[in-house]
Length: 181
Image (cartoon, rainbow, N blue to C red):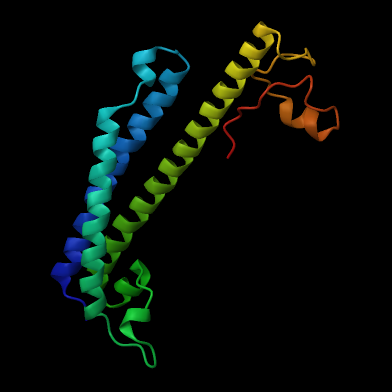
């Protein structure tokens, strides 16, 4: 059986991760919202987000070390070497008392939910950057005359996906930023 104190350490690790993920998510959402304002200071690289990201990486490393210790406490599985076992929260919770297992599961689920939200925010930020890059490249090409006018200049068009899907081509359609990932 896994020692309850190791489970408590693992739970605390998840709580620290939750706190860091909440900070990271809030910062990323704030930057995305300020992206629209096009204020250079609002979209410049953020030292605060870099620090949170580094702290998150350090926490991930310490949790990996703790998981390695927990692996030694897990009950043996017949015909499987401990090094070959996949350790996840469900397996750990099976070896814990009910109350500890529920608290650990809750913390792990919250951390997982926040990590998914951060991944979505990262993907949306990447799409916004690609949109901005295409819009600027097309505008500069049009201004310098190096691009033939083929319909509308590239820009935001909420109907771009349906136009392309109807076979109307993309010559008259702008770039699509709709928040769907």
